Amino acid sequence: MQRKFFSNLILLLLLNLLIKPAWILGIDRSFQNQLGFASYGDYANIFSFSLILSVILDLGMNNFVSSTIAKQPERINELYLPLLFVKIFFGLVYIIITLAAGWLYGYNNFFLVLLLWLCINQLIAYIATFNRSFVSGLQLYKTDAWLSIIDRFTMLLLGIFIVWIPYFPVNLNLFIGIQTVGYLMVLIASLLVLMGHLKYSGSVQVRQQIYPVFRQALPYALLALLMMCYSRVDMLILKKLHINGSLENGVYAAGGRLFDAANMFAVLIGFMLLPAFSANLSRLEELKKLVRSTVIILPGFGLFVSAFCYVYRLEIMQAMYHEANSYTASVFGTQMFSYTMMCGMYVFGTLLTAGKELKLLNGLAFVALILNVVGNCVLVPEQGALACARVGLATHTFICITNFIFAVKRSSGLFPISYWAKYTVLSVCSVVMIVLFGYLHFSIILAGIAGCAVWIILVFVLQLVNIQSVLGIFMPTHANN
Image (cartoon, rainbow, N blue to C red; front, side, top):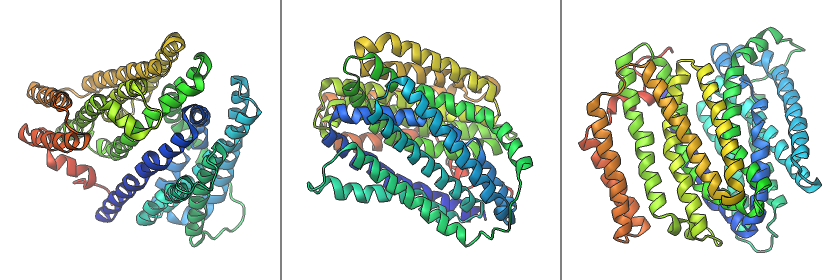
């Protein structure tokens, strides 16, 4: 059973890393180049607005479904329709609240229609994810892996057809429309998979089962909401407070695209870390080895990526965008240093989450939100997108450092002095190496290949990664079948 699950989990990672970056760096980027930074900036602003309250669409239901169905697959007929109605109800609540907030924010009728459209897309996507939670609960892992890429694969095909054929007029409606088609495709596919397992036999009340789930999930939902707010509110402030808000949003979105593509790797590893950390909380030595190894894999490699993107910031932006300039490159370079901090948060924040330190995490996230809002309100009018990048870096640095401090405090002896000495050597060598490549005018490709090779060699020479602990993420030594 373990081998089946983890082999298909690897399939899930490979498929997502193959398709989703192609959409982000290929089609999404091409649409921005054709729409222009200002027009795409308006879309990015509205899209961020639609995401902030999307946590209402889940509230722990998906985790409840996958865990319950895994233990009691026969309950699929009892749970599916009642929970689907609950999902749709919360979806309507989400749409109404988001549209009301959009009206108060000052969107005109055209933008409100786009916001409604994006909210509907979010609802369709979350219902498809809800269906997938039943599929994974039934332990159809390979099927779920393929379902996870249907939306982006459909968007990728439609996007290639549209951006490469000049017959189609590229506009925001067309861009949002192909996303709708993608979400509908995965929704239909997931329904077809479930139809073979559903045998509905009358109305069933599951209030007693649902209420405890919501109550237990609320701290996690609050944390997700706060994190979404301090990650997305900057674009809303930028639109309102800067004289060229739409254009600045486009600049900020351009820099954030590569950040999002790189962040997918960290998110997928963070997804695997939570059960791995939870399983080893009582085995302190195994936990320490696992944490030390993942610190190298995530923030350790993240620093290399951030330094590389900063040194080659202008070349990368000019290769990706028609409107790129030194200002766009500065915004992008600053944004990418947030990636290192995000990687650290995925390690230490996940460790605190595994220890159920939700009150602490919510408190830190609330402080981060206040810092982010105040910082952007003060700096955005003068510095624009660069202010958002700098404040975002400060916000993520605050979260990373505080999560690190509390994680180390709660797990004594997590990092010995010898480890820090080796980690410092790796970090300094990574940054100096990339700066040297830039000074010697190495090409991006040569610097990337040589840098990765040297970094990997340093990791093994310094003996910073415990291979058995890393493999433990994929193939734990103990688990309940």
